[in-house]
Length: 218
Image (cartoon, rainbow, N blue to C red; front, side):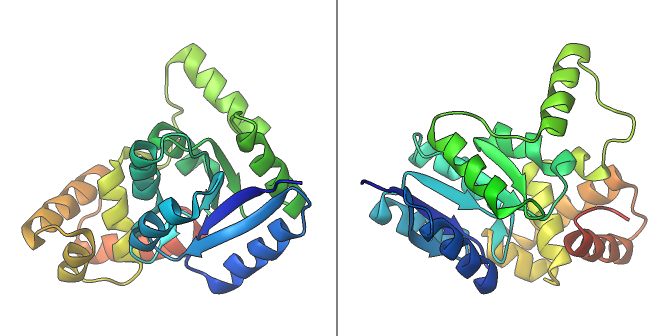
């Protein structure tokens, strides 16, 4: 029996190993490779030629959303399932717009993860029932909820900068990770402060760390 090949992008070795064991236990699925960051993933995926990829959002060197955007261009037929600790209300729609075919939270059961993976392999979109209802209501009403997370105000690049700051990187280090100038990063930081009503860089850093740890703005 031919098995569907799955590639994993996650920078937590324990999580990556657990996912690999879960997938390899299935008779129709096998893990063909893994990577901890964007650059390694973009290098390895063409070599492995997977049938699907599982991507975490919070990676050491950049956001998984940027990887999804790049894969949607370079590997148009590769379905991506996002597996994240972050609330779907914050990230799911953003990931789907970037090109992902599904979004599931790490709190879900192993069986649900496998079901979601099989669904995107069948060419379908996977989201939870709650998110499906939310997206449908938004489509009908064409309005955002009043309690939308402040993170939703950020562009994908601003969100990536916010994430890296939450990981403890200084401005110059963020610039190096994203191959941008320090001045450009400082501009992004100012935009983040304005959009999220932070009065200082210190306040931004504190909230970025809390967000990265708890998966939401406290």
